[in-house]
Length: 354
Ligand SMILES: [Mg+2]
Image (cartoon, rainbow, N blue to C red; front, side, top):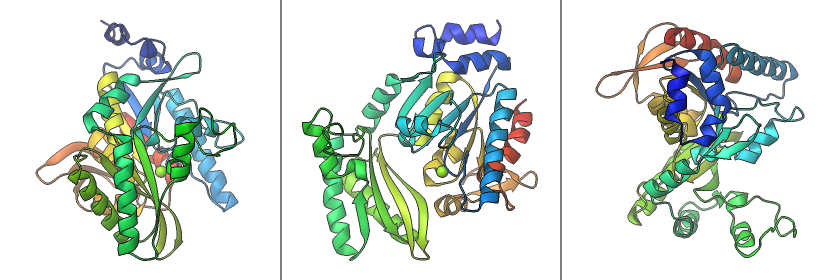
């Protein structure tokens, strides 16, 4: 039986998939096990620079990635901390000119949206209920624990900046709790809090944020939320001792979203990323990974826990504590960053799987 007929039979109960752009691309690939690109967006698939020359170089690299993937009928799945509207906003030529991703795993992997042939995104509600149940995520209870823990940490480390991110702040939570459309009535400018994700922002050092993560983990575990994930990703650096960190408290991670999609689509995954929220996608869920140049400290630190068996200049096999895995890692080792590294790593990996 030709691969696509097999695929269609498999999805006869999934109308969202039967009408998706991803299956269209699979049919063009004509592989028994099709290949998908899973990519983080910011600082991986696109990168900004204050320097106009560098900015233009990154834009060109992104454009080249899009045409490389299109030429090879490789579906591209965005796996991002942005929410769906943040990705859709980025698709405008006036913003980031992002492509129509075939699937969007948004909000750090807590939501999955499938792109239809009519250019809509349909939520995969099976995934949502699965992760909610598995993680035992209860937004109100977790929110309360976090509120207390933030207060305790502010006392322990005087002067630290540790707050809920705007959409998770109490005023916004209350605005949405008691009003149908608080944005319309000018009660808030923020979007609604999300059911399976609560995010904090911290300014300080990497060591401090690691301490905060351990502290929050302990508090959540003590209240039977041991399956809830805490993920750290760094953002802007203000000074040597002050970096902006996102601390995401989640029902599922990017790695969970990738594993689910790999199983659902029965495909091989080549993943690319640059920061802490990409770690489990890159090191546990994918078949091959690209760690782009300019990647963040938390990913560099994590990589140091593994040994790598070198195959070629930039390519290695990942070795965990017991054995060499068959996961290939491309690590940038020169000046190329973000989308430029993606471009350098992707084609050899595609050939490898062919
Ligand atoms: Mg990123």
